[in-house]
Length: 247
Image (cartoon, rainbow, N blue to C red; front, side, top):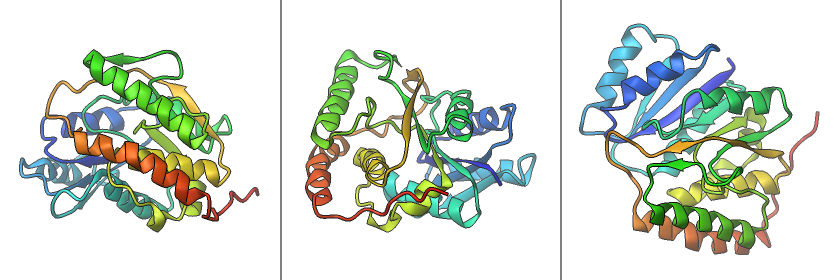
């Protein structure tokens, strides 16, 4: 098994079937794992219908009870992917803010160009964000600059949630030590991969604000990211990180 796309969902009935079909329609084979946090709008029911039909052997679902956080959803998915021996594991949103076609670029960076982690980056070539209010663009851009400065990592889009990991990265990172649940989770995963010695590259993408459904961003999530950066930096001064093994 090669490629698994993990998509967390909560109330994504307007998007979930379309995003699954878009990924499944790509010219190379991807499997999709939906992790649904008890969506009351019937998101999981739509996924089950597709699983029972045309995507029986390529689409999978984990249902969780209640909103348990983005980070815990991905950790759950990562462990499932490792257990099922996928070689390349992707993070992607359900709302088409990430273009499914860009999965091919992320995969190419890891499979053919030597990356261990490929980030779909909004900021590696200027600012490539569509339909966000200017205030949110500036907040996100300067937050990434702040994170880069405090943590000392040469990553332009530190909060990006569109990524490809080689399985070795997720096997090496001590997943049970990842602490953050919101957008700080994205920072923590990148920083931990960096501290473990993995090669991280940024692939330019255009990020498009969702058209259907409701954004899950909140002030609390953003505050967690800002405060979490200091906690990450402080704990890293004493923590011994496992190192990448070169074969």
